[in-house]
Length: 511
RNA sequence: GCCAGGGUAGCUCAGUGGUAGAGCAGGGGACUCAUAAGCCCUUGGUCGGGAGUUCAACUCUCCCCCCUGGCACCA
Image (cartoon, rainbow, N blue to C red; front, side, top):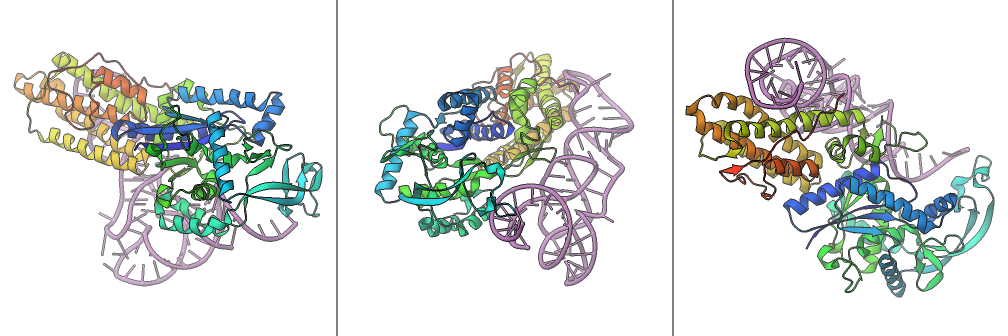
């Protein structure tokens, strides 16, 4: 089995913003943790390229939907590269392999009698391309001018009868407390299930929306965008793919350990439609995925929106401060599940304080002292100095807490744990004052022990921070000449080890 | 109106029955290996408001206010 995790796939009707980037970085960080310290991992992310809004945006630009979607997709891909997102799979919903599997699923649900065709009639706004309900009526009981021409008409569509699985879903969610993380989000879902009634319309007639996957048994219709999009989680994991070598082995991946999504798409899409779809497709309860629901990044307390003009562009930030500084800030200053406030000032503060002053300086002073006093060769004599013993046991405790934090998806807590070790190591330097020990030949062994302790602590720190800031982590290991020593346990550096050259890894950002 | 999350030091947040905590910012000090970084000490809060339970409440109960999200209702 591999540790399988996914992010939401982003809708390709506009440019990526900080929220998109946060989610992918979160997934990447969790993925890197498992890949480095746990076992085989598969991280899937991607783009949602079908649907009405993409078709509309394409029309505005005057290009075909596919071309438009591909242009936007290229921007996302370039950004994920820049942000060091290490993805094992790429879910693009116009991929022919996806189309094939979606059609297989539709056919199979149809064969099982899970899809029904029915007529719906009502008022329809051509301009907004949607059916209107009484909610859209104004004070006078009329549909306002914002809807343009409103006509009454009847349309036939395919429906997925959700309501018949309501009791199953309710029972499932109630008996599986960690289906939704964090736990408080589960309440919203349970409320939503209580209100669940009726069918989900899963088709659009082609004359109204052509940009989608065709129904295999009714070619006048294409799938509704959510139905198409949600299935990416299984189709790109190799579901019903037979022997296709370009896709992973589904049995090695499923069930997904975490679908990472924003709070806006928990209800109804991921919390209701998705488990019911899987249930109807024949997945047993033990094969249901888990949902990790994150919050939003606000700006100065306000929601980020195009109309407010306060959209944060991750691309610009990555260019300005570096991908790792951005990754560190987003992971350190946010509690997974809760909303946060984005502030460039805090990003700089976090970088200077945590990365440059605390960690960067520790690395630099440690290697510098090793070179200055021992020509960069570290020795590991036996010791019984209480300060050194203390930091060694702290390192073990920190590693344990770090692992537990990651198991609970509490990335900020994992980082905090690592920084406790950073602080302790900096304190140790002052306690032992190697520059004094170096002047006293009688203290030579203690100096060796101190320098070893510091170098080994720095090695462990490089590993601990590697999921969050992969590039600087690699640089630290390189300066230690310890690229190959990946064991997350005290004592990896052998006695007699020769360290490499050092130079500051996190230059301070001038205020 | 209902459900949930939040309201704790200037800022970001932790704490959950026993005399208020961390980091950053501010002030002072000793040191010098280091990215004028680090280390030590320190100023600073009636823990949203009110009532209650208790020997004791930030922590439990009730009422209220504000912010955020979801839902409902009205228009």
